[in-house]
Length: 284
Image 1: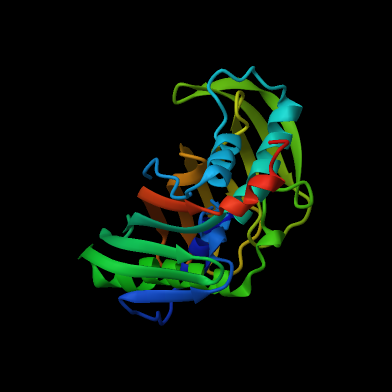
Image 2: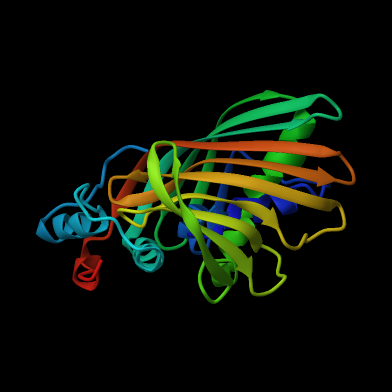
């Protein structure tokens, strides 16, 4: 999973002219739109829309049985990283509903945008506007810019620089806890470089499946003079054979519009898996 939406939020808060259109189309690796700053990377319904024996094996391997024994912290982290790579390759398309709410407490402005999100492998990501309520300034300078930033990120296809992997982060086990009724291993994340799109914070993994449950923290570097600080919490859910972002809450301190609060909710995911991946995932 990657740390995407926070990166997009960084960029959208640099207030300026914003492209507005009912549909935004991206060319690039749109799978990364599923996660935290790139999959809080990128994943609704329990449908796993494939067919045939190979597809059944893919689903069986990705979806861990409830009877699995409790994993050690090291194994859970290894499993999470392996599943992340597998999911990025196996997810070939999806549709979902997205609701974005943004508020500027200092100016008492607010906006809420409902959209349809569609991804088709390997290079297409689209947003279709459904309904907007609130202040036009918030729509143009916060929400629309956030969506456009996601499109730009997909076009650049540079997600390896922000992925939650050992190449970008040091992982330190901090103990076992409970989160929303799930037992989780907790890891401290420290970025190896002070790079835009990376964060310092914590990662929460299910002790039985290695699935990502939550990522939270603060950005280590702002891409703009106008952004002073940004913090986030992103929660994930298991949808059939995939682990996908469900809700991200972020708060930013900016030089132009003051405090900015953004919540992004994803629902009704309809993913399609690549059945040909079945032969490559035997150890997961």
